[in-house]
Length: 173
Ligand SMILES: [Ca+2]
Ligand SMILES: [Ca+2]
Image (cartoon, rainbow, N blue to C red; front, side, top):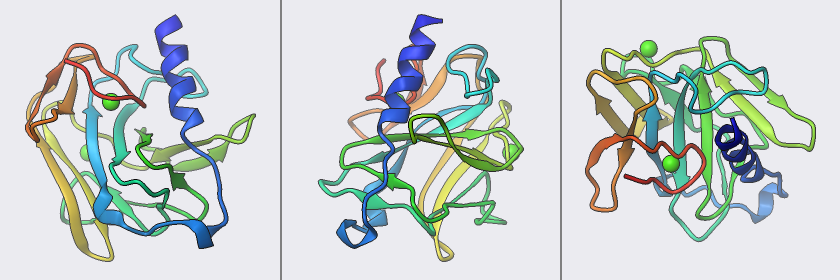
């Protein structure tokens, strides 16, 4: 459980709010970095549940205002989740979004924001799609998943399974 707590702290620390005037809107620098469609005990949300999750990474040197960016589990309806105002992904930072089937964006004690989408990820294989105003920015297809093994992006740009999932941190293999 220690691992889970540390990871949760890491992902919460990456969220904070800045005046929108200082922020980038370079959505091309936001990418899907890791996915878990069968979360047994890798990470818990603030209520102790273990939903599926998607990790985003900001690969740029600017903090990015995510408002208006969309996440989905398919191309038919790209806007299953739309980021509200006030969510910032710091430069080089990570953001974990829980895919729990019950949408919510709530501010936790300490000011961090926890995001849940109305869709879940299928462990039998599905997609994760990042888009803005109908244009797909990133799409990740995955086949059958194993509990507590993530599907993660490597430095060479290919995807593979990871037995050491890292929600909110650099991927490890
Ligand atoms: Ca789904
Ligand atoms: Ca990671």
